[in-house]
Length: 471
Picture (cartoon, rainbow, N blue to C red):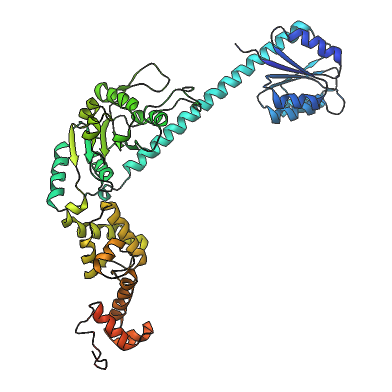
């Protein structure tokens, strides 16, 4: 057991020597002949008890112990005094700066007993403080988990919608309906942006585990050691920086669902531990020998060909079959073009209130443009396009414009600048009910040039005519 450290302060060398001999057998003793020297030692050493003389030049014992309290508030502070006038000492005791005062001359055995009991009190204080800190940490973790659970449960489930009317998505819906109430593991496959995370959330929140946590972790965002700690937790001291016991995601998700995105990026070592959880429902925290039991539903997802990864030895075949109990493939958006306009309107309704409440629909040209694009980024790219369109559009509908992707602009045969000009002209034609004179004035453009632009951009209609302009 580590010996406690004592700091003895007195300006008389004989007293320092005598007290050092008294305590050096049982404690690590530091000595100082002045208050300044004592404060310097306190800055460098972990002192458990300070024994100081009251009457010293430059700084009294009471003054020293008051300053010592600021440096090390846990240290026991005892003062030695040979004077009967103890008013200053009583005040210091009442303020909490001094644990006890001892009058000179002292009895050596009684002093030993006093110091021993004071250090026993010191140990109790430290232990209580440790327990309080651990309780605070546990309370913080519980509060965080409760907050997470509350946020998850309080989500508006109506916002977790899987949009689609295509035959491909109807097959996805049918698969989800068959597996949603089952405890088996699910593997979601599909390109980036098709909605794997959304589908995982849907399965959880409309399944029997909806009142417990849904926790997601991307397996490709953390190095192996950190990911292992994140998933399985660790014991204090398990590695550098592990200053306290920590619960992992498997424990936090007990009774709920753990969504492991990009499962193909998991290291071979972690694949073994994940396989153990899937087979036995048990795992061990980092640095622990005892196993812990959990009941967690696993939904995994990947945008890679996991079967090919198995064939090349990058993914364990036994784990592949464990997580692939019920596979669901989400097709890319280019293979379900019937869903594009439905999704676009859904994204518009979702974001218009915070970005541009005046817009509620799309122009015919914008619909045509959206329908011609193949969306390499899938639903996520479509949603980003709609958000950008809401920011850049004016009027009450989304027109063709600068929000369109470059590849789609090239398909239309018009430059982005032309698309912007076309949208501007169309907006003004609607505003001025097809009056080219007023539109030309607003654009500071001649009527002849404006009419040429109207024909070039296919904006002619019965309401857009200017008899004074020759064709």
